[in-house]
Structures are given as structure tokens and as C-alpha cells.
Amino acid sequence: MLVNKKIVLPIICFCLVALIGGLVYATVNTNATSETDAIDFGEFAGELQKTVENQCKDKEDVNIVFYESKGKDIIATYGDTNIKFKPSSLFKYIVLGIGINEGVVQDNDTYTCNGSYKVGELNFRCFEKNGHGELNICSGIQESCPMACVEIAKKVDDATFYNYLKKLGISLLDSNEKDSPKGLNIIPTAIGNGIEVTPEELLSVYSEILNNPEIFSDTCRKSIYEYMSCEAMNDEVVYIEGICYSEAIEIPTVISVIKKNDGFLVGMTYSEKHDKKELLDITKKILNDYTL
Ligand SMILES: [Zn+2]
Image 1 (tube, protein in one colour):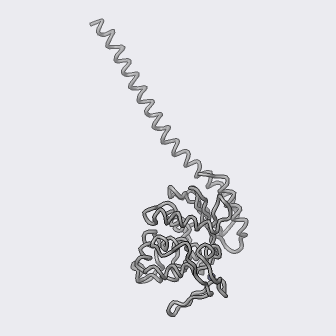
Image 2 (cartoon, helix red, strand yellow; image 1 turned 45 degrees about the vertical axis):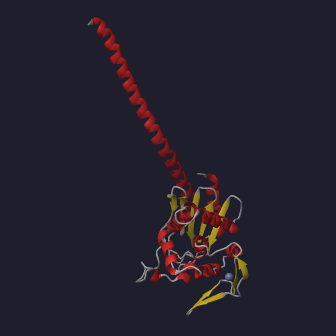
Image 3 (cartoon, rainbow, N blue to C red; image 1 turned 180 degrees about the horizontal axis):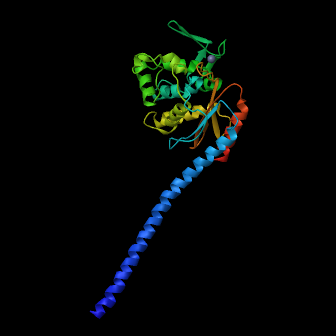
């Protein structure tokens, strides 16, 4: 018995030590993993939020949202990012995507902008009174000529166009037939005036375009991305810029910035009293200070 105790006790002790050691190791390890993930992202988002607040403080009527394009998370905001506006020219990549995905847009397509286009009783105008003349898709994007979107929309049927909007989470303006393709007025919608979105919604749509192969095919997304560089300002950052008007809230300008190669989408609304360049510089500085 004595011999047995001498053997059994150390074994029990060894087992206990191993068990406790194992438990401690497992706990530390689990905590380490979950805390590392949480702390990294939390710290980053918190820092970014502080920077945005510092950079934008004292600026009334500036609304800005930083969106993490892969994880689809809003990581920093300033002001009211749920303000509704008509996306106007910011909508062109969505129309372009629908056109490319439906096979009605080819790289060598050209069209002519005469300054206006009549659909039934409605007359649509380009901001360039006398028209831009002949354009291809890329020069149309550079000039922000809405007529390319009109041309694309003419080639897509209402039900198909409507289904894309539904999949992207874009609602039609309030009408009795808001929930059916009958409520879609395709030409005003194609030039970004027949719908209203918030900066958050628009960024989420851009994220879908850039990252979700279920709505737009890989080839289509690659092509949209290449067209985005038609208005690129430098190699690192693609600025997508649009002048939008929302009568209801009197916010005249909306700018959206996309950083290439993962990372941020940034949406911004501000009123005319702000200097566009100053706000862009602030955004650029924030983008340069942080990389995801
Ligand atoms: Zn035009």
C-alpha cells in the first residue's frame, strides 16, 4: 500500500499540475486570440474616430463616414451620415455595372451628347448646355456627362434594372408602386435623380460593386474598377466626385473617395460654405495616416 501511495500520489499531482497548466494555457491562449482581434480593430476604429473628430471639429454641416470596404463595417463617422440625397453623377458606376453585367456596354462604345435628350414628355439636360459632342465611356466618365447613363439605361429593360436596385438595397422614391418595377422611372434613375440614398447606403453599394461577385461578375467588377481610374487623380487613390443637389436639405455637394486595394470607402456631404479642397485634403491626410 505504501509503495502504491508513493507511486499514485506523484501521478495524481502530475495530472493535477498538467490539468491546471493546460487550463491556464488554454485560457490565456483563448483570451490572447480574441483580445488581439478585438483590441486591434477597436483601437484602430477608435483612433480613426478621434482623428476624424479632431480634423472636422468646428465644421458645421460636414458629414463624413469611413466605411471598411471588405468587412462592410462603418468605422468612423462625423455629423449626420443618414442624410438623404440624390446621388446624381455618383450613380454612374452602378448604371455602368448593370450595363456591363447585362452585356450591353462594350469598351469601344461611343455616343453623342447634344446637351439634351427627350423621353416621351420629359426632356433631360446635360449640364453642358451645348453638349459634349462625341464621347466614349471613359471620356464620358471624365466629363461626368450623364448621357452615357441614359444610353445604357435605354438598352436595359425596367424589370432587370429594378432587380439590380433591389439586390443593391436601393429603394425607389416614395410612390404607390415603390415596390414594383412599375414604380421605376428608368431614365431619371439612371442619371441619379430618380432615387435618394444616404452616404452610408451609397458606400455600401460601392462596397457590393467592388467586393461582391454575386451581383456583378468578376469580369464586370474588374471592368468597373478600370473605368473608375478614368477619373483617378493619382495611382494610390481614386476619387469619385460628384456634384449633387438635394432641394430638401440644401446640401449642394457630395464627394466620395475610394482608396484602391482594399481599405476605405469614404463618403462626405458638406454645404457650399466649405472649401472643397480643404475638406479633400483633410480626407487625404486621414487616409494617408491609416491603412487597413
Ligand atoms: Zn454631356
